[in-house]
Image: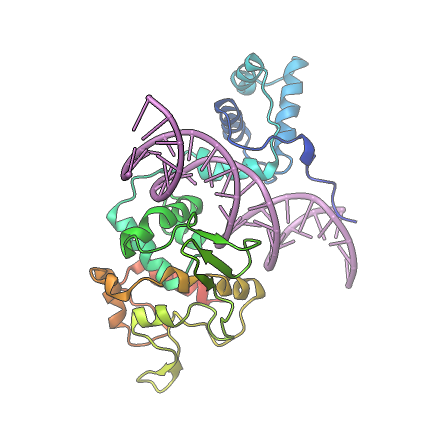
Length: 281
DNA sequence: AACAAAGGCAACCGCAATAAT
DNA sequence: CATTATTGCGGTTGCCTTTGT
């Protein structure tokens, strides 16, 4: 047998967090930590409340509980939602907005090296969350780099479920996303290889055959990564005219790559580390 | 001023990996 | 070992705001 059910889905609140909920979660986590279990955290907050009503609460919780009781609020949230809110918004060391040029370049470099592995990218930008970086990339950085060529999601309505490959554009055109990704094209496809001037497998001076970091490792990937990469949609991302890529000076670092199984440190030092992390499995 | 389209972002959903029972 | 909960991640959605007509 497994564990007990995590939460009553019918009784949890969804949607935007209120300031009261934020304050409650922040206060609790700052005073008690997460206890290593987000799912039970909302219940624990309820337990603390109960102690308060029994007059046995600790002084450290008094301020929090006074606040809570005065507003007659509880935390009817799923633990998963609490975790997300804390990690993406309430954590004290988080930065929001105001991405610097250096951060822009780092994100772009990492993206072209390892793809949409936002958690790894975020790990190289202190104070930034994967969600923030993902949003920033999707809404601003992509356009900043490639111009306003791409069809917006409002103009590009997927047919059926989000996982399907067919898209229809408002001009009536029909496109296919990444369904023909071959066994060795996990990471990307021809367009991005063209972007980097690294076309497929090649031999280096040591006589050992290497592949571009932008092409899949020859060893089988874990299934999840295979599927993620297959749906990575990079062809769509990089469908813009390559002539528009002028001015992307930081991409030039790839020219210095001697061993195509490496990522040039000229691109950005952090890219090498991130790339190596991905290479490890 | 009113409306529509586009932009921006927080939050949700679903899946895979991992851990607990 | 099998089953199920929990965690972590990436993709997507929905809503509010801003901009354009």
